Image 1 (cartoon, rainbow, N blue to C red):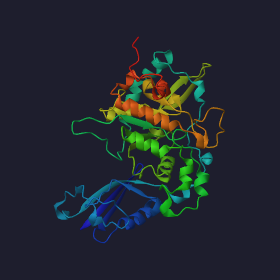
Image 2 (spheres, rainbow, N blue to C red):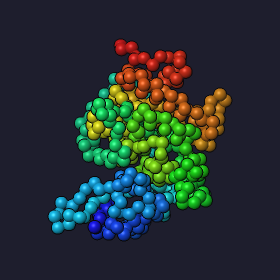
Image 3 (cartoon, one colour):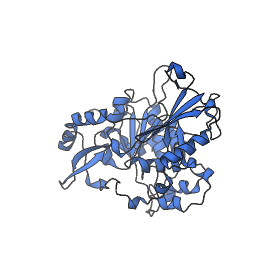
Length: 372
């Protein structure tokens, strides 16, 4: 039996055809993909493949042992099989490029200079562009990594949209470059270099949140850098949580905002409407967007949960630990708030996320805000 392997790699589709099923292993497929992509086999993540017996797919798995999803419609090749999957990984020559040397990274603006208020002139100007946003949404493609969890009675988990940089991690190419880890340790819990880049309790927070929410990552960087971070930090293959899908900076929508001094500045935001239009069981009533930049909430103010920006080398201020290196514990508090929110059975629109610390320490009740 002959097999065709189709890899979705970024915007590229790679087809490996006429592979003998009984004599071709996943490891050999990775070697073929290295010739086409430049990605070393040890850095390749193949998402969407399952074995017939339910065991995890390894380099030793033969193509004949993969669970079939689609067969050829051609009667003359009825025994041919097609396996499609998502390929993640970064070519070796790009893996340790310093972000400071990149020219395609987004502009960094001072978040404190922006002031967004629902109902303000600025807000109306944003909402006036909804037609453009709708067109932008229609042309945005989402590639599922792990399907959303829908129960038998058609109920879904709430949605948690996660920023990466300075929310969950503080990335450093130099730290990874200087690491002397073996190939088997890269992206694993034993990857000490990657663990240095994670915000304290990052994995514990994501495991905790995953009990109550489906997770989506939305990063303001290019797809290549996003792949590096997710792969090197083991977020795609972590056994304790799963990512539904990932969005990069190409899915961000440009708007024009005013600084507090009145200056007009064009910048990009993360419109949750893109997700809601494609997954109608999610909406403003059951979505939380966690980010360290409040300007990214501009089109969805009530869904934004702002965290302190995390910097590994930031000096600790007196009586302040959040956002400061190893002493940072903010994710533990946010995790507790998310649990309270998910189990409260409240409409998220009725909760003021800015008071999350008060809800956690008990000085405020998690109760709908008063309607004016």
